[in-house]
Length: 112
Image 1: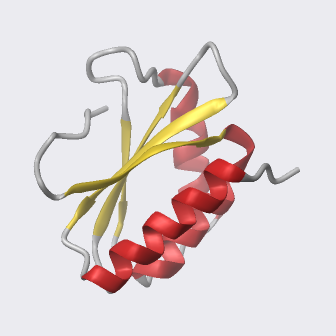
Image 2: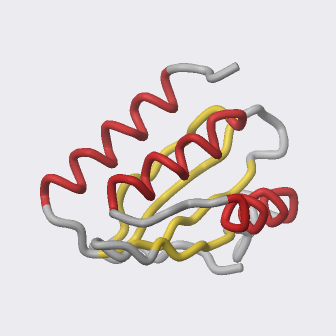
Image 3: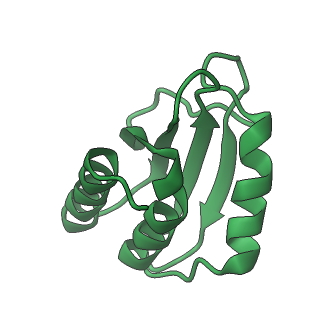
C-alpha cells in the first residue's frame, strides 16, 4: 500500500460515505474512460479493511487505465463511516472538474 504523495498531480482529495465507494469508483472510471468491473471492485473492496487514513502507508492504490490514466487511492477511517479518497494523474481541466463533481456528490449523499 502506498500513500498519496503531496505532489501537484494529486487531486480530488476528500471523503465519501463508505457505502458510496463502489459507485464513486465506477463514476470516476467512467469519467476517465475505463471500465471498473467486479474484479476491480473485489481488489478495492478486499484492500479497504487493511487501510487506515491515520497510518503511514495506510492507503491502497488502484490504477484506472483509461483515456485519462489515473491512480485511485483509498483509505478507511476506522472510527467512522467514511472512506478517504484521492487521485493522481494529469487530467485535463474538464476531466478534473467532472471528478471533483463526482466527489462532491458522493460525499453529500448516501446511496442506500
